[in-house]
Length: 88
Image (cartoon, rainbow, N blue to C red):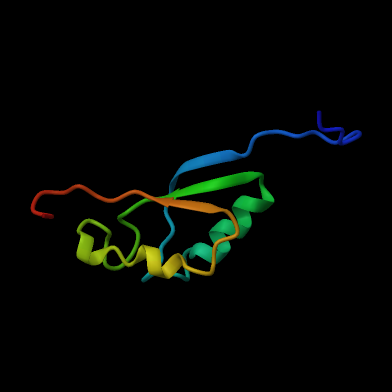
């Protein structure tokens, strides 16, 4: 039993479709700003889409999103990878 007085304990929200534009277009939205906004709104996990960064995360060699996010995230972040023709 967790007594928090007049407060409410609720599960966090997961946003499975977030276009973080890092690396590449951080003026649009990077991991720092996206995860700060998520935390302020009660979102505990973001799932980053693969196509809004440069280069797009559609091949393992281009999956720089992991390194770009390191040390910037205020909530949990997961990553989609893009499946397109020819990305072996």
